[in-house]
Amino acid sequence: MITDIEYWNRWEQDYQRQQPVNIEQNFALMEGMYQEALHLGSFQLVDPLAGLEPIIRYAKAINVSNPSLQTR
Image (cartoon, rainbow, N blue to C red):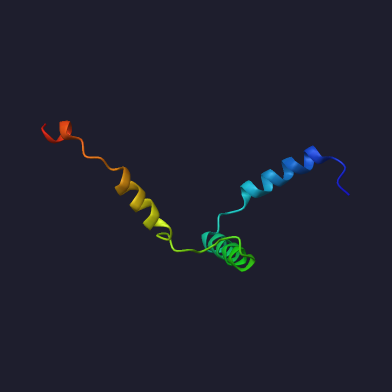
């Protein structure tokens, strides 16, 4: 059991600083976490253009031409 938590935290930080960076391992971990999130349904992969039609209709409905801007 750890009795001196401050000592443990310092040791753990020093240990992590001394470890070399392994890009391939980091990408493999990231890919695994991404796949797990997909499996759990955390990311809802939907069409980014879904629901855009009502927004376009609304924008066209409120679009009022301004004659003062056209004469410049």
